[in-house]
Length: 352
Ligand SMILES: [Fe+2]
Ligand SMILES: [Fe+2]
Image (cartoon, rainbow, N blue to C red; front, side, top):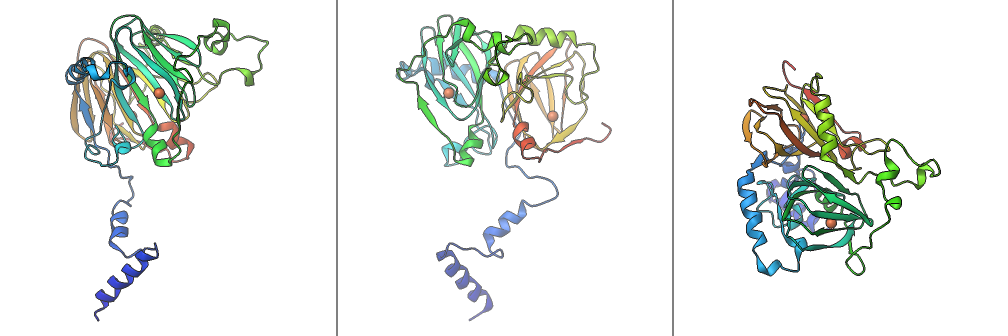
C-alpha cells in the first residue's frame, strides 16, 4: 500500500475518533489564514440610502406584519456572508449587526430583554419613544439611545413613521454561544417616575445621597443637539488626523459606550481630507448628514446622507469631504472587545 493511501486511511481512523492531524487538508486551510497580518472574511461594502429607504417603506406596507411591529426590520448583510446557511452569521461584520427599523404611527414593539447589547440611532421621524428599564426616552433625529445588556426595552410610536438604525453585538455573542432572550411579562413596561430615571443621576451634577454603586452603570440617551453643539464648539481644533472632529459617546463611569460596542460621531469639515490608517477593530458607518468619500484599501466609496458602509478590520482607510457643507458620520465599532482582550493594534499609513 502506498504511503499516501496509508495516511488517508489513518486520517479516516482518526476522524472516527474525533481527532485530526495537523497535516490534514482542513488544517492547511487554517494555516492559509495565519500570516503576519490579521485576516478577515468581511468585505468593504456600501448600502445606498435610496435603496434602504425604498425597501423599508415597502416593509411598512406588508399587512402580514401588522401586530408584529418588531419584525419591520432590514438586516444589512455583508456580501461575504449573504449565502451563509447559518442565519446567525448573516450579519454586517463578524462581530456586529446593523439593521434598519420602521415603526409606524400607533405601533408598539413589545418589551423584551437580552444579553446582547444594542442601540438605536434615530434617522428619520419624530413622535416616538423607547422605554428602557421603565424610563421613557423620546426619539429625535440624531439621538443615540442605548439598551445595554439585559435592560428591558420596547418602542412606542405616537407620531409620524419613524426609522432608526439598530446596532447590535449579537454576532459576537452567537459565536460565544451565550445568547439569551426573554419577553417582558405582559409585553408593556410600566413607566418610572423621573426621579428614578438615569438622566438626573449620571450627569456631571449628581445626587450626593447616592453611593456610586447604587447608580445606573450607563447613560441611556445621548441627544443630537448636545453632540452637535460639542462638534461645532471644537470645529476650529486640529481634531484627529484620521477622523477629523471625532467624538466617542462615553460611559459616564468611564470607558467606551458599552462593554462590547463603541459609538461615535465625527464631523468632516468642508474640504477636509484625513490621513490613512488601519486598526484591527471593525467599523460600520452611517452618513447622518452631508456627503463624502471613504477610501478603503484604495477603493473609493462615495456616500451621501443616509448611506451605510463597512470598514473591515486591518483595511487602510481615510475620509474626504470635498463639498462645501459639513459632513457627519455616525459609527459603531467593536474596538472595546479587541481592547479588552489586549489585542488592539493600530498603524498609521505612509506619510501619516
Ligand atoms: Fe431588543
Ligand atoms: Fe479608523
